[in-house]
Image (tube, rainbow, N blue to C red):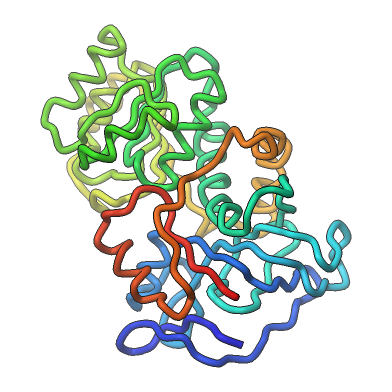
Length: 324
């Protein structure tokens, strides 16, 4: 079968052995795959958790049809249309743990649309609802809101009753589109006055919750823009892995600062997250209330063009690989 494999120079499509499902896994004929920042790292030769290095098959979210089942798998059958969160998915066939596999909720949803959802849904439901404990009527700021994950965060925050949803993007054209996905206010995180804009929008109080995909250069202004006893959830580090941090302001505003990642979670934790998303948002997905725009779609043979588009950071929404 074909698979996108990391080499010494870049990635290339190679012929590799078709995987066999373990007792806890489903084997899926892959129809579409979503691109994520972590994939860009792995494709560049870096490690992402336990994944990475020469010979690695890239990919962490995909959709397709179940073709075989491990002996422990009970809730799926051959032919089911599914979306999955796993590893080594940029290939004609991929395996996923049964607890990281979800039936596509709407028969009208395409495989391409389904492939946009797993990472953004699981990441942002866990950040906003589970760790961020968002309550109806609270104000929320999504840093890095024009990414696929960020656009999903805007929608979940609005769906959960946030009174004010603010999104940031450093690109003016993308900022102008954030309102389509639930943002009441769009800010530029490179503007030196953005924290004051957030304070003005909240009557001087600050937001109750920040979902931070940037970190780095926004860390101290995040503290300034957060309400007393507010929460900051550190999801990503696109703005830098380290930076200044005003410990006194953190303490004075009594802010809860929580880091989240899937890299150090057990399979039982990830199964629980997947189940929570299904129970809480499954009907909304089926009703089309949560969806991401597809920026562009590439055949798997053109994977390096897809990676180049992501690296250029000019996309809005998700970049997709398709297989046929």
